Structures are given as C-alpha cells and as structure tokens.
Length: 279
Image (tube, rainbow, N blue to C red; front, top):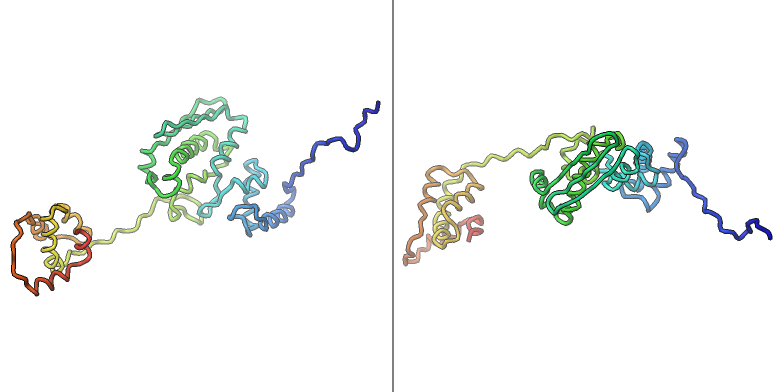
C-alpha cells in the first residue's frame, strides 16, 4: 500500500508575513497601505502616517496591519484603542490577571503584575461629573458603562504596565481631552484654558425704566419672583442697588382699570426681547 501523500492531499496553508524587513520595504509598504481602502481615514493617502504607525506597532509588538487598526491619531497624537491595550497587557507574561466589573455606578479594574501586589483603579459617575464628562453629548450619553470601563482600565494598565505600553495614551481617554488643551507641537497636556469672562456693563437706566412695567406684570402673574427677575436681568448687565430695590418692590397688586394711553402703548412696544422671553 502506498502511504506517500498524493497530489490531492490537503496541505497547511502557508502564511505570508508582510512585515517590512528594511527601511525601503517599509516605505514601499506604507505607500501600498495609504492607497488602500481598508485603512482608517487617519492613514488614507498618508504614507508618512502609515510609516510612523508601523514603527509604533513594532515597538509595542504589533504587526503592521494590527498597528494601523489599533492606533488612532487624536489631536495630532498617537493613541491606542482600549481593546488593544488590554490585549497587549494580557499577552505579556508579566501580567497575572486583569479583572473588570461595574455595579452600574462605578467601574472597577483589578490588575496584578507578576511579583507585585494587586492594583485596583475605579472610575465612577461622580468622577465623570467632576471631570465634566457626565451628560456630555456622544459616548458618555449613549454608552456610559463602556466609557467608565475604559477610564478605569486606562488608569490601571497605564499605572502598572507603562513599560509594556511604552507610554502610549489610551484613545478613549484622549478623546475626552479638549483639543486646545493639547499642545500640538509637543503632544503634552496643558492646564485647561478657559476663555476670559467678558465684564458686564451697568444695566442701562433707560432700558430698566422701559421694562419695569412689564416686569411688574410678570411678577403679578406669578410666573417669576422678584429674586428670579434679579437673577435673570443680572445676566444682561450689572444692576445698581436702586434698581435691585425697585425690582424687589414689584409686589403683586390689584389690577386697576386705567384709561387707554397711546404714549403708554408706545412705551410697551419698546420692551426688549429679553422681557418677552419671560412671559
């Protein structure tokens, strides 16, 4: 009996490794990738970005295509998606375990590095509110549980395994950092810059006198209190003590029948839109 394999025998499929071995190969491969429709938009038509991403991937232990799929360019800085971060850490022999949980309010990530004590990081909705993330349009509104998980994961893995991640930030975390807080020339995060608050001018006396009668009607109707009016009007201009007192004295009074006065009607027509919005 002939035991030699026939020409029809199934043979293991050979794997082709496209990882460049020289700088010239890397340049050529970058051009191919930049022309492909299968790369993310940050790399489409940008062979330079492809080349840098492949180099980052090589330092992290990612193949070229893995690098382009898992590295994001955010505010001019390379960052790793959270799923790639945990994959790199778990595949490293220094990692004993990564455990994640969420109780509906707080996400917890427990990690242990070989030879070290367990490390625990948490991120709660209270933390999200403090950071200005709670209710933020986008993923924090649509997928708050997932975003809590990514924040807790990022803190834990970056603290315990900085050597494995090579200092690479986590994309989900960088997304939450305003663009003007990141210095594009250095990639460093600067203290948040808030625009200088414009100083309010004194509330014009003429406008105040023109609106006072309408404000009285708003108070009499019960729609606003004098304190409410003072708070609202103060957003338009700085009220003097006399103006505040005049508003505080707008107590509800009995409606009185008066003779139509054309001048008064004309004055009523001058009431600004801010007053109309109260009614």
